[in-house]
Image (cartoon, rainbow, N blue to C red):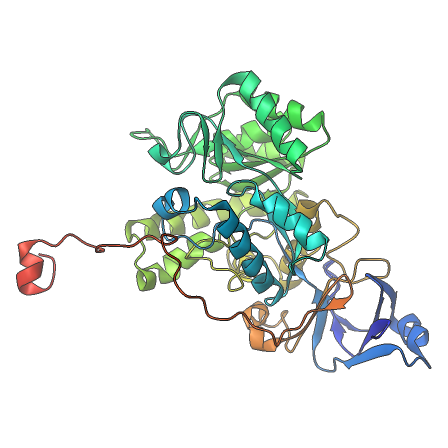
Length: 448
């Protein structure tokens, strides 16, 4: 077995936003030990080094997906997610199989901020121990929600856990749940700051936590050294989370001037996660999505792009997240698309977008200065792509162009692809129909 790997002649995009340059990369152990002429010199005369000629190819950091639901297994509906994922052992086995799909797509790090049961914590530990193969993980436990719920309405109980959500009531339950999850090994505490409320009087999601409750979560977590991440859609919730001291915010859409000011003041990292919305808007009709959501999601992107770009220009980190784990964002398919959205909708350059999907993503892993950059002393999470993502960012979504993936200096066997899955009894929702069988449909074959 070789002691290390030398990648020569490749165009290195280092993840910092700097232009690509032809440079050698030397990896030994789990780290990048030298770059450029030093890398060539370090490998010179040695027979224990694997050599890769990357002429015409791009060498860059592995992608970091800061919003990935590795335990959900691609449900088609909230019904499936909350009522059909009730077998903990099976869910853990499937999550382990799905984790490898991310590596095969060039993803070397993820944040799984909430999981069904506490499977994310167990999967992270199994990956770190080498029991199963997957990307680096940071993970939360269950998402904290109030009795109003999150985005699943009455599927969420008034107390206790269902699916990935834990409903808490009052300060004592908030503190107890934060401590329970930290004791179990959570890297993050996630809070659903907004939810969908019946007959609400404004568009989008409504803030469902008070200032006092948010302060309680943050203090309980920070007292034990654990950061807090919030699901926030809307200006009021985003401003409240920033003021409360949240360490990262998912979505942060539809911000007003006040929310933008608070986000900039706090410099709280944002993970817009528009891939789900963009996929539904562009291709939802192909998979039977609710047509009414197309306009809603298109407007959410269009009406949020300006404030998110303004936050970025003011020094707020933007991270890339795919929301992988749903039928619209299956594992291993769309982890590159957020960068494309940042380029098209926010006006970022390809190098800036790549930085959001690599170096900035290290924030979500708690590994700033250790991953997300191809440079001496960094952990050797590196991919080699036959193409130029600066010319076309979508080359990163073409798995036929992905030639090498290294995580901690170890080469991933890209030839070993997942076997096709067979149905599992009770795991997927069985639909009687996707529309109502009236006599008119029966007679004419179409709705009137």
